[in-house]
Image 1 (cartoon, rainbow, N blue to C red):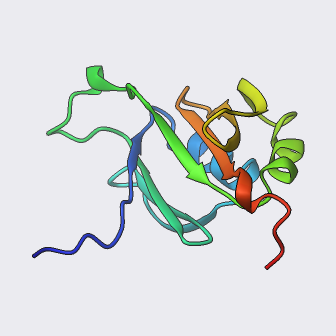
Image 2 (cartoon, rainbow, N blue to C red; image 1 turned 30 degrees about the horizontal axis):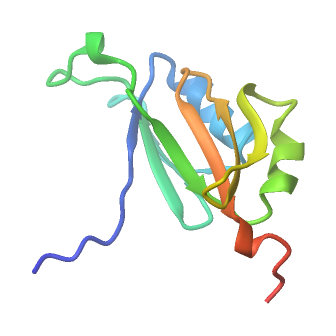
Length: 127
């Protein structure tokens, strides 16, 4: 049986420089690689990887956008909230939900929704 080992989304963008800048400056990602001929870049934060790209010839630029959100499981969500709440456009403020997650969401520079959550049983756990 095939084993899935990672998911590395490719976010389409109209402005590669702005998107790279957002993920580096606001979220603390590191630029791992970039190819201006392909209008593509790879970024990393801890164990997470993502790519950003302008649509290529096989992809329709009319299809820019995403009908969902990207959900990041994080540690110390309250600390992250305090850091990001003045750096990015807020989708919804930090809240503890009935399903046991404390989370918030922002928009990136392209309008993608980025959600950040931490299970309540992990909050304050220093083990």
